[in-house]
Image (cartoon, rainbow, N blue to C red; front, side, top):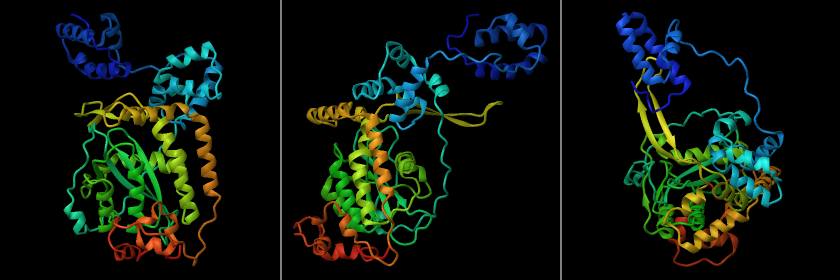
Length: 445
């Protein structure tokens, strides 16, 4: 009988033999011959080896001798620098950009690559990286708050997820991250995050409070910063996105935008942006409380100048390409097997689509080539340290949220408070903007 062309892993082979062992023990001699033929075809092992393994319940033995290190210390040192430049991402993502990052760091003078190190870096496998890199701990999951009742605007928007296999850029998930520390009392900073489902492109902006005015201003700034056309925006059911001022701003900045929202009791409908909340915002800023105008403005500079370029142009992200539900077996429970494509930075995913004009595509790639990944990471760390050095808000002393707006000229109330001219015909009358600030415009922090 011909051997199987698909090679089993050692763990799969032992799992298979454990199942066949019981059949082998109960079988007659002719039946054992047939079973041995079948097992030879499936596992690729010889007949005598199978007979020896089936004398007792098959069990994989521990390695008698550990594998020696095949790479020099210089390769490990270079690997640590590359890993630091990519902010200690996992082995799968790091392996996909290992050599391009090494070349960028060499051009920037951060690495000196000998011929041996060059050869090693170009052939390092994912399993080797797993052995050489310290894996990061997974943050503990947090309980979700109970869902609030939907308002009239929320009920008018269809509830459905953006398909995970969307290939057209412009379908964006939206969510907010609270920087409230240990308590949600008073006003504090929030991060508004937009994530493109097809490419992973991420834009963030900090706001102080959660009024309709600051939310509308943040969305205006985020949409103007995106390099592609917005086709759909998908928030969760939070009321900060479903009000007249925010919806009018959305349709003004993106006239053809389509709105959808998450289904109640389906938190995974906003799964892509939820991943960014943990792996992007929380990973850098943690749970520290931010609640002043100065902190908000500093955080916005951090996002626009360093963090978003670092994530979009340097760090690779993985995209799921297949999902298969596997039925339970005697050795495994019901499980889902997911396959992902080659980890790639969002800028390369975006440039591979027809969504960008050639001039814009060239400009993005040239911007990426000019970056020093390690220097950019150091700038991010220095900016975060500067952000955390700002003092917290003084109890009883109000913070003026108008000073945090990116485009105050579009809002009559902000123009009045800041003494600047109002840009006509961009929003509805002033009463709309003023009514949106009843809760948090000048509330003490």
